[in-house]
Length: 455
Image (cartoon, one colour):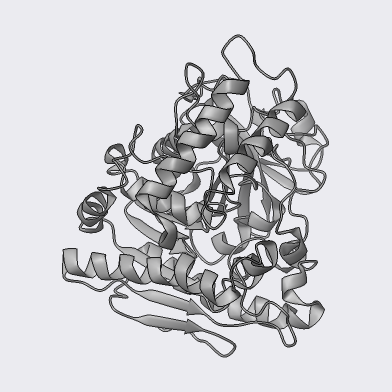
């Protein structure tokens, strides 16, 4: 049963102490509820039958150091307001999605989760989302990733914010280890295990799902030794696995690390966040000539906690025997990438970055387990869209809701609202069926207008 001590109303939040990582002390314009977490009491929103806590701190971290679990507290912390995002530059995908991060404050103090759950939930499956953004942008508490719409269909939904780019992934000699953002994600999963029950979730039934770079993170976490029992199922949406080339990735990481090391040291750090982000961009410029079609920043295989890139398949095969996987991609994955990088065609991007890698992963899992994982193809697109069923287009059907995504150019205006809302219920139910452990083995779900999910 969902753990809550009392329900408050307008202005109640102003009576309580530290606002956590909230960016405003303005009282919520709706009901609130007090919850008791493993680390301490919090104040969350309650509206339309859903509990929603925003920006709960799961860890702290000094710059370029591993995360440390949050210290317990006794005062009631207010988690009713929008949270910060980790430091980042504007996204190159704004032309497709609209600006997702506009007016959201940035801070290195950004290790938080947002959680939504049906009121009075009991023993529901838990779904943990890792956002995309090429490991350079995004944030778990952004309105477009609101977990509320998915939670309304019957799950406890958690969205993670982790460190990005130079601050989160690149090894810098004598300054930073690799994969700090991945360590953040692992710490967040540990937090979920400890606190899921406080929201009415089953910590023994956690599904990890991610989109794009978030799906790449799910792949990395499947290959990580110390994540056993932290999640029990996985969903990979548009994972860019087709370009996991060992030599190229190693060469790129080495060049980036060398440049960063020459421009930063433990005694010579950029004094401002703006200068740090400028250095991050300069490092990215070094990476582009090596191969502009793969993620420059991201998990570094062969560095703790990941195996060498030559060996992840063995780790994935082992993980797949205990973690069922659901894999899919969109019909026109490459359309936006060909605009950003016209050196390759849209079809090349779709095939070589997304489709081949996803299909190969499914085959590898089938060979290792004797069971073909379920897959989906997301084919819907609005009429007259220049991008078709583009990269990210499935997200409004799962998270955020229409109001959060209404301005996204890829949806092509208000005429798409009915499809997004109605088809979205079917898509959410399919994802939750996976989270519940329903038998979807070997099925291919082609998602388009008129799609109805039947378990």
